[in-house]
Length: 352
Figure 1 (cartoon, rainbow, N blue to C red):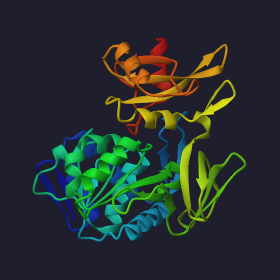
Figure 2: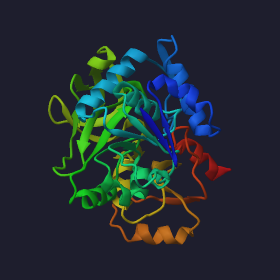
Figure 3: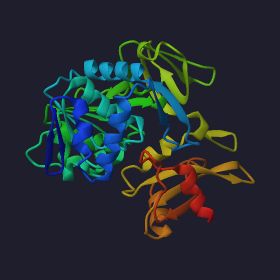
Figure 4: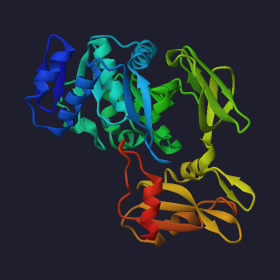
């Protein structure tokens, strides 16, 4: 196995030999990787993983190594990976997504390309190193667009993909043979349990992976049972529309829906409408209002004047309820440990 990091190549006969090799480095990310390897090869049967906390309070979740191996095997089978492939690890090691990229490489005994998490992780990879399988966030996809053609298989997850980013990905990869997928999953499901093709042939529906069964509760929120998770029930707060026994359309999060004057507003719908008009990071949230109960607001990470975004909102045909009623500018969003936008903490900066 080889581990590629910047201009360095670490080669070992056995994966656990990396523990000794990485002890010689002084890089903090590689040290985190070494500690993760020590934990994986220990006699402990479980891992404690933190949820992202991007929409609520982060919580510790206990996952077993047996289920992690089963999850890795499912990904390997789904995407046809083999030991000759080079896998890219460019996600925080505190997140389940980053941890599982390492575990997949261990289970495959494949080469691992390591790049410190950043907006464009491909910039830190040597030109002669070809990545075969990468897991990235939508933010990384947006900033790495020109580098994606060289990657055979790409999965994008951690946050919804805007319609504008989806169109850009399709245009960028339309003349190549690489495969691009949006994934659906969470810490509790040990990453993805469903995928949606973003490259040709594209689909609008998520398809459950083998061994995963789906249903909905009275709120239309998704319920999941998966063989690799011992078929225990996992209840989500994600509103979906089931199209068949194994396909669904993602609508939005139940706990993020805005009730404005009795009208239910899905923030994701507004965010999609603005996705090709606002280049900076932004999100739609709610603010209490005496007349309507709550109103939608636009929160942008920017140094531009508010009037700039007022002009954008005025250029879009919104109905009375869906148009954001307030605009808040924040110099820098607060990020969670998994590099997602922490909406709750970011909103606190408005009043501070």
